[in-house]
Length: 527
Ligand code: SIN
Image (cartoon, rainbow, N blue to C red):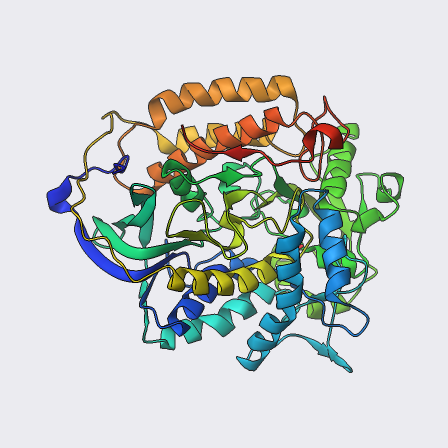
């Protein structure tokens, strides 16, 4: 039996619940998995860390990449995705994504999803790395919200699904090689709760909050990934973090994404001197892959000692407001009119390609443990995710994972579980440590990396981990910081180990791709 780590209670105070399929996370992947597990006849508990509707999926702007236009085919989509993955995307997983994608979108449409249409049917926009316009979108730049708007009522109305809010996953509980449930901290009554389950699906999203600059909401703290690692699951591809090139950068503004679709519709990047610079970095200019554009921006910022570059959207003109209403509303608050003014932008951490290693049915290497969405590493993204493939991944692999988790069995472990204290009791300033961690990760595990810096980072992290991973906390902020601290070490180790540059992982000291040595994955497993 594996003991949970850091919870301040003993077995007498831990309440219990049970379910057949426990789904952790209520974004697009969690909703899809819950619905398919319930359709398979299972009793499902969907546990959301915050409110049921507070999810990163809700914020996704660009859209959903899917081979539905008459000039497109799953084969084209497959080739673009493999190309973007830079040799490390798994063709079997990508085939599943691109072949099942159209069916999932048709299911969304019959459930009432409204995607923008033009005269001939669904409208398609373009993003970097796609050989043709392939991205469907909703309300301009509210694509993720439309997915949530469509799926969440289906979950709410489904009598087999119970929803729990403010359930923070502290740890997975195992018996031998099997996951038998999750230990939660219930934020309303502030009590620990053990949920026994026949199978557990992690749909907990990413870890953008590790970085000082990120597009991710505050809930994206890698909780599922860290819990999976502690329980013995294999994590894969952790060195591959995607940085989005264009995030709004104005003092006092939230780090709000300016969708790649804005560049897809014709916006260009200019530097402090209003020079259009992307052509000198890549023939695809603004629509080169995200790593190329992010590094070009960084280079321009360094050359000009500038804190940002600018998006020039003036060619979109008055149409901007209609095409990108949320972005328009945000920049307007800061007195910027995209039809006339330049929008200050710079890169930020956006998406974690790595995660809990799974097969194409979402199964991890521990019995009864499944993962889907950003927390998972199904192999569809490889070293670099193709823009707008992630909502599709949530729908396709969420569905498959729910089916597989439902089939995994009805057996709920009934043995006694002993929860034991294992922490050291001293005060730790969580926000201070988180700030230091954010700065360290941004500087040394960010867009450009270097062996010496990564070694320094690992030393620092080891020092912080030596006291912070065993400190005692009474609320999720401390556990979130511990999760990020743990994952930072794993990311830095993988980034140091990969002595080449590939996809989103760029090493200044190894700037070339090395297929001979590195056409392979790096896995991390405890022990
Ligand atoms: C964007 O709208 O630029 C983000 C889309 C994505 O990350 O796939």
